[in-house]
Length: 265
Ligand code: ADP
Image 1 (spheres, rainbow, N blue to C red):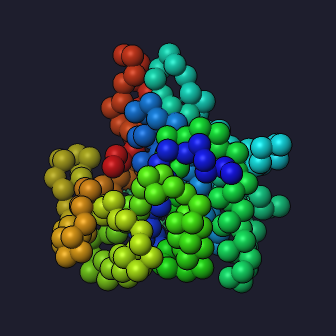
Image 2 (spheres, rainbow, N blue to C red; image 1 turned 45 degrees about the vertical axis):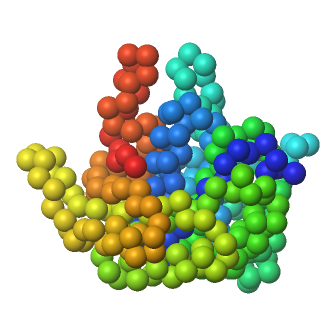
């Protein structure tokens, strides 16, 4: 079974679309790989897979090997720089044409989620990050059921929940936290994304969507608050331009600057 060689499985959840769930998944993946861990990203946002775009690998095609589908390699582990491997699997790679609409009913989505969890050949991974669709839909229920059944308890670490600071978003994310407690998924913590905008000229932080909503919500639910990620216009520019963000800003490995200006978690 493809999950057996994975040490930690982490779901990334959000109550609403557009709050930056895929961006946070991407940042987590880059940060963990930079720290030397081998990382896999599984994009289970079946109707709106945006992970291929985040990693600028939209035209990649997945191939079938005897061990299963081979995920797309974004970075191969290199002992000389200490960066861990980074591989990605998404439904986007299996669609005949980029941008094809996926109009599926629940049972087909459930089958696809199960197949993703059993048929991808990840080999050894320190972390598998699973990017999910917004809300609590068929994909979430299938993921929760399958992972709770098939992953060992020490493997399935739990969920990181992403929100923006304003009440409209946090109200939906509260439902996500309730979903976790009902299904028995441990909440690793809440990330407040788009938490203020730091002016590149004067460095003053403007709280465009107010701030603090994520922390209040985390406190209300008694779960850890993991931190805030500001709006980073350069990150947006990279994604819009189809340029692959590599590693967080200011990163140096063995004295070599490998940074790209992106927000860090
Ligand atoms: P979701 O997965 O929740 O639907 P995305 O991660 O796709 O949201 O983000 C929606 C849009 O907002 C994308 O264009 C993304 O590049 C942008 N974005 C997300 N977080 C940030 C951030 N911290 N700074 C700048 N742009 C961001």
